[in-house]
Amino acid sequence: MEKKKRTSLIRTIYIVVTIFAIVLIGFLDPSIKDMAVVFKWLSLGWLYACIGSLLLYWLTDALLLYDITTYMYKREPFHRSLKVGIIGLYYGALTPFATGGQPMQVVYMHRGKIPVGTSTCIVCIKFVVYEISLCAFYVAAMLIRGPYFYTNHNQVFWLTTLGFVINLLAVLFIILTIRNKKLVLKIGGGLIRFLNRLKLVKKKEQVLENFEKTIDDYHTAAAYLSKYKLRAIGSFFISSVNLAFLFVIPYFIYLAFGHTAFGLLDIFTMQAFLYLAVSFFPTPGAAGAAEGGFYLFFSTFFINAPVYIAMLIWRFLTYYLILIVGSILVVSEELFAMRRLKKEVGAK
Image (cartoon, helix red, strand yellow):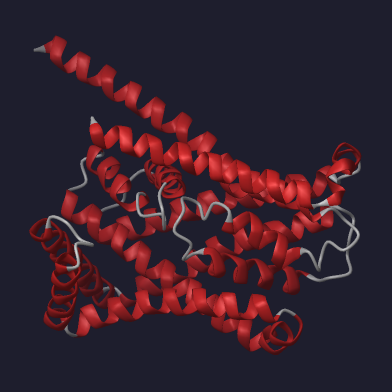
């Protein structure tokens, strides 16, 4: 009960912080007074393109889960992968660093009769492929537009580089887990004990046990990736397409305002940079950082258009919509689960 109260308090604080960040940015933007007028002349066609791209992002996320489940376990109905995928995005949006998404996906996959060990391995592989795809986007963007962003958007360049380094460390950590599991356990265990002495980590034994289990999970997942190299390459391709559907949304918003001065490559790359830059921010959904980051990163593109309104549209589509859809799906799933339980009890 105490844990639930604490979680509820944290979520309430997060919602307040998010609303405050949005309102503060709005007050600082003089274009806020023109909001009603701007919405009237936005191109509905390009807004529909935004929604279409978002739906394809959800579908390809489910396709990635479906693909990995197929070669890791067996072919499952696609609608189950879609349900688990959306639930993962929902819980990821509610937790810092999206840490709640994977455990809840394991829970719902287990409800679908997939063994816990297998489902854990599936979501670990999905995470590895996602991290590699994200790093690949950074490298490609730097090769194509790196000098331009270094010269014209220096703050963006260095914030993105910091985000890339953090994500790269995650990939290197996974590689090290594959190559030398004992060394990782030794280093991680030593760090946990050190933090325990500083009173920064409580319940040392439980934390050590969880850490060892996580390392075992990623080590097992890596073994499967090594076994299914060609299928893993296919998963990497799906993950890259999945991120591309997300990164193209700001470009469609830009076109909805009737602007064409900047091309797809410029805005697509900027969105990839923004995604990397805020990925290490420790609030659920990178609250505050995402809104402020969009305003900072895209203000040069929306010169003759209110960037604040563009940010509101982008944030609603890419974040708040998954909270709405995800919450409806989770509540529905819980109601169905309760009905099934009642029927089973009644049958006995």
